[in-house]
View 1 (cartoon, rainbow, N blue to C red):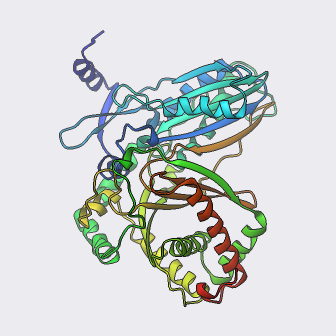
View 2: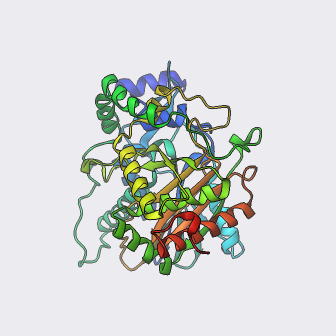
Length: 458
């Protein structure tokens, strides 16, 4: 067996065991525009899957191998290239799986979080791969957590739903192979079929679409749209780019979520636009800045053929809005909605956008904005495993690209709100005050949408 890495790579390429592909546009944004090095653990996408029931360690590992064989993202690594890195995609996958039986002390909630965090933050080897791992943690008899981490270069939030669905299908196939599938469940093929479009095929289609003329047409819009824009926070400490973000999780209760949805319907705006307009008003009241620029993620999965494909498809769109404290909130909301729809309609690969508008970032800073706002509605499948109960949770490692992040996720009748903040810029007290102000603004605008923000009652 050849041990020299270059010779081994040549053997893989010649035999078809691996192939090289250019970076996709989202991957380029990660390498070219993020203030955080790609290898930083903050770029890991993480979740955990709680299972109560007689799940088999061996079956789980076998199911994971089936997913790796199906999903190209789980067989992808990266090699240095002449101008930028290249994707190294292997033809077969491997099961990056670990098992650990927890002690009673480690099973306590506080200690358990630290155990999972250790696995989530362990760096990946880009060249050697794979860029994912799953650790099966046993808390007690028939009580397990499957802690899954995958690098952002090959995954986004949507990817987690696709992974969970494939893992459960793979587990059922393994049960079927071992004669343990209940007769009431449908029979599945022996392997998971490949997705309709692979991640690299999507990347090639995007490169074909974004020809210089198409890029230039969109850049004309963004040069005007971003002219004179500024970042929200100016208190960055030296070297803060490598500073881990802190996370605080709270909620918008159902009794407030209901009028928020009603306001969106009444004004003819999206739920996202209502939340964004309230967030802009919150920042205005907090900072006095009336010209607010934030970044927001978009799924980039408009093709039905990639809905089941794991990979990094998500893009980033700058959203700019002006707060007029004298204008009725409902009118401002309509303006936010119209501007947001226009920005989304002109979405383009962020690496090309940043270069095209001539944006240059100082070390440790994002190239255009320092605040992120997201409304997360990634589909999570209904998980069904014979004789077991399951629960899926995503968890952010705090991607250190911004000084402030606000992520709102529908959670039943209410909303979960995750605040991510850089401690040297915003303290924990600042975030508690920011959340209280955000919730106050939402309550007030739902109660009195037709008055100006300056006239909203306390």
